Length: 413
Ligand code: CA
Image 1 (tube, rainbow, N blue to C red):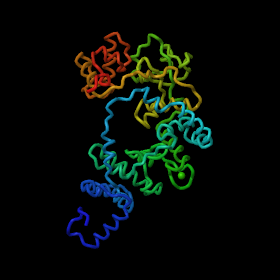
Image 2 (spheres, rainbow, N blue to C red):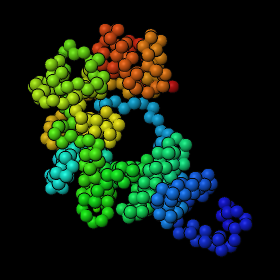
Image 3 (spheres, helix red, strand yellow):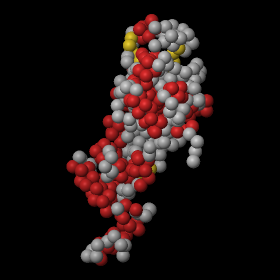
Image 4 (cartoon, helix red, strand yellow):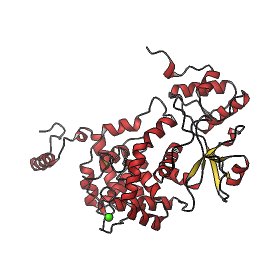
């Protein structure tokens, strides 16, 4: 008898459990985790209350497993930050551009149709596809029901993942995919363009009209769904995402604080496009983004930049999507590539920076090792007060001027 069975279970029930256990494809670590099973039972009741069919909720959650790896990944805190150069070079490179261009040509008819119906141009759709799954190569191999049940039963973001789990069960209920084939990232993102279940429910489209919204096996469904989502996020089909620009020598970097201004105001300050040409005379708003400090590239970000951030809240991501889309559409490389010698910062370095700034009277908020807007603003003020270029960027020069030795440069051992 398996050790986890209470002694008073009847023989027929034991037989049923044993035969059910034998049908399980893999050993169920979850059974040795009674609090997880109790939690999953509660999730099943919640899902049924929310309108998921009793059959789906019961069947799918009965085989949901606790995945320790998912908790590990959720708790993972990278020791060092990624520099913009590392981030961008890994995601946008000649191989990816070449492949993107080939796929753009191969799927032109489909992508043109998506553009007609959603307003999102082909090169952007291919860029999202490239960044999310390397054009469909990596969907993630985690069981989405198990991953989401694991995260829903963990205290960190239980409510959010409970909602996502219920959405995943609804997707199974509608017949889009079987529970067994519902694979994705450790956090539950699925298919060619890595939709979370709630996004899938709201925005996925059956573009090939086979009766299923299938973001794993149908490229038409996946591309039309991406376009549909972006359109709902407010995609502006009249304009690009933004562009690389050149700043005049005496530029006041304090203006790169995320605030939007009319394009003509930036033009009057002497900002040009990346080739030194005058910016277009269009009545649109733009903000200035300088992701790698004054030694790196500068971008004017238009409305679609914020739309991309509605998909993934990262400026690096939004620039990578826009830049990859431009390259796929035929543009060349950045005129000002990001410097490759930028320091990789440990959380301790950022914390030391915050403490040093606080000590000198520049308010960073509580030193937490995270480079947020308050810290950037404190850096700018410190830079201005010390005749440094006030780009808010934590450069080597900044750390040197504050006498902080970076962790990566300290002698080991
Ligand atoms: Ca379909």
